[in-house]
Length: 129
Image 1 (cartoon, rainbow, N blue to C red):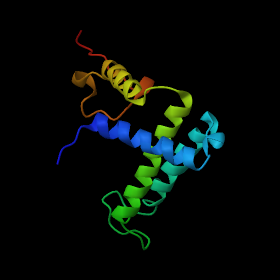
Image 2 (image 1 turned 45 degrees about the vertical axis):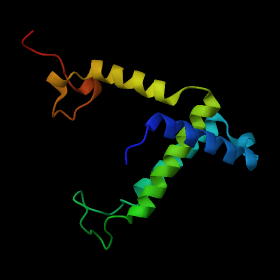
Image 3 (image 1 turned 90 degrees about the vertical axis):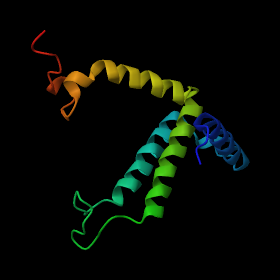
Image 4 (image 1 turned 120 degrees about the vertical axis):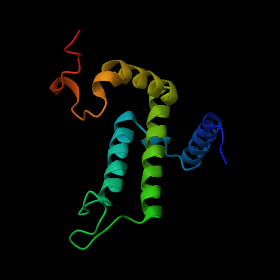
């Protein structure tokens, strides 16, 4: 079932704001604290992949993380990011669209396709022009 992502996003944002308000947590939600929270939550997601091989096979006694645990950690990252955007008073969707446009300009398909090198390390200009 496909849903309207903007409506879902707005609803999630509203539910999160109410959740925070009910617990009087806004007093702790500063830009710095929320930025730290994003990093902590992202690292908790990453921790589930520690000691696994690139293909997900067991390495040193561990394997792919439990799907539900990974989804929960990814959700924590999203919720923290939404809280950061709310605290900093910016539209995360507009910011993402703008960033994607700039990335498209910086990494045109013709020269960036299949090239994992980023930024100044890469000469992404067409040498034939």
